[in-house]
Amino acid sequence: MFKRKAPQVVIPRLSLYYRAILESRKEVISSDELSKLTQFSSAQVRRDLAYFGQFGIPGIGYETKVLKNSILKILGLGREWKVVLVGVGNLGSALLSYKGFAKQGFKIFYAFDNNPRKIGKRINSAIVKDIKELSKVIKEKGIKIAILTLPYEVAQEVTDRLIASGIKAILNFAPIRLRVPKKTAALNIDLSIELERLAYYLT
Amino acid sequence: MFKRKAPQVVIPRLSLYYRAILESRKEVISSDELSKLTQFSSAQVRRDLAYFGQFGIPGIGYETKVLKNSILKILGLGREWKVVLVGVGNLGSALLSYKGFAKQGFKIFYAFDNNPRKIGKRINSAIVKDIKELSKVIKEKGIKIAILTLPYEVAQEVTDRLIASGIKAILNFAPIRLRVPKKTAALNIDLSIELERLAYYLT
DNA sequence: TAGATTGTTAATCGATTAACAATC
DNA sequence: TAGATTGTTAATCGATTAACAATC
Image (cartoon, rainbow over all chains, first blue to last red; front, side, top):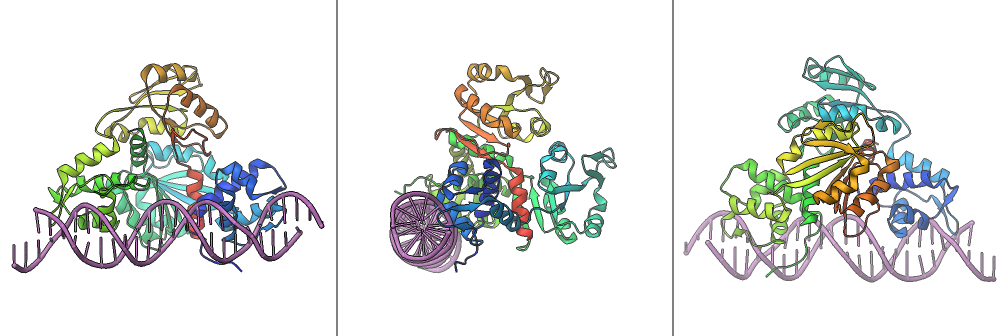
């Protein structure tokens, strides 16, 4: 039987396969159809899925019911993840108001800020708390995921505190490559860098 | 002399080298120092820079003045880029309020929405206009970069209009892989997918 | 059986790294 | 000259693609 650890780039593609399956509303779908919907090659579709098991039927295709459940399980979805957000500025507030996260099961229970005017507010599912309570709340509630929408200057310092409190995965919007232990996952969304990439393509 | 087209992954690293140089405040910097600051290997630093020319002095390192100017030129920065933003919802408003873009020379001149309550408002450097005027304004002002903060349902349709109006580069926040012509650059920032990646690492 | 499509192997493509001659 | 560091080649590593036997 085929075995090997899936490369990291496969994971976001699984998300896209999942979306494509939902959109298709089919009972059975082939790698060729998934290819057309996602713009990845059919070989890549089959290869990506094969990293995780045998979900298809030769000559037929993939039963969407099976495939949906399998991908959900692989990605760790279909359950609720508790999330905290740190930094209730413009971007932080916007993300708190965004309803899309909850739809995929990511529920922001607490937000943190040091601005007394913001503390105590409720935005969507989140209560804004004093950043002094950061460690206490994360430990008490056993929260593992944090979204960081802080200014550059304090991002690393807060990250260190998050990790010390038990956070295992960070989605970082501050324009800095966070230093985190190997066991912690940090994904950076760096808007300036993305714009600079666009500028490059225009040149 | 060494030649070959730089792979796309090199470009965002150039942005990070640039930041590291600014931070270091040095007159001369070695690939080894850049390696420590950016967490990329020194071989990769030298390799990446070599795609674009010979900027260093063997035995010495890189003059930061030379390197800064070179990277600015490569990335197409150090000038003002006019940008439009489409979709003045939570995320769109947050991005309009963000001061970081202007600092790198990306100035959002116009935002578009179909909500009459929003039309006519001014947020930061941008005036919110009726989305009906999208094509007219983009053509008149010769704008090449667009930021898309729209719901999924209308993202592709608006994209087609943007491209028809002359937009060459799109930063897309809608959870959809836009279909664009080869000559157009589209970068997707898909928050749900990023969260799903985090969930995967936790499993 | 004929046609379709998976799962997997081997070949290809692309990016990173190690190593070192050339240079200051 | 001795020491340091670049630029570039060749080796390695990793991911994608083509092809097809196995299967329905």
